[in-house]
Length: 141
Image 1 (spheres, rainbow, N blue to C red):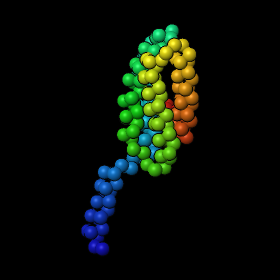
Image 2 (image 1 turned 30 degrees about the vertical axis):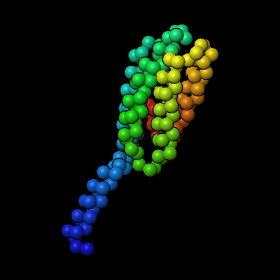
Image 3 (image 1 turned 180 degrees about the horizontal axis):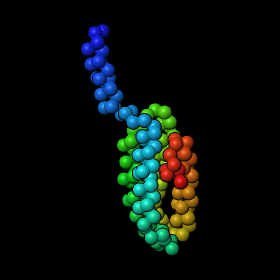
Image 4 (image 1 turned 60 degrees about the horizontal axis):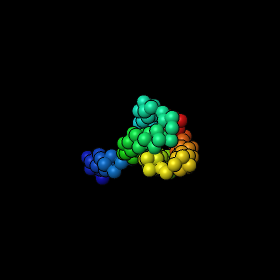
């Protein structure tokens, strides 16, 4: 292969890799993901904490509305294959937390609210463990 042909092949390969994702390093994904998580945590912290079952039912959808776009932003990060399983487990658990928070509005009584909150705590533990395994800091808190 002539030098010019080799250079063209290298440039085309680089463009194809960038177009197919995988252009970010794991460190870049961690840094960007932690920014997303910190922003989300800060936004949720601005929502007044519920003091009653009825307030929890209203709080859930408000929190879900914050979680959904954060999950969408995390999905756009398209991490490299290294650790992808942990990344996907983290994002999947976060997505489920958003869905669960939204379900609180339809909870029928205190026991169902408690059950949903308990399931949310389980998902939070799962999400944090997967985030830690991937290398996130803010996402693992």
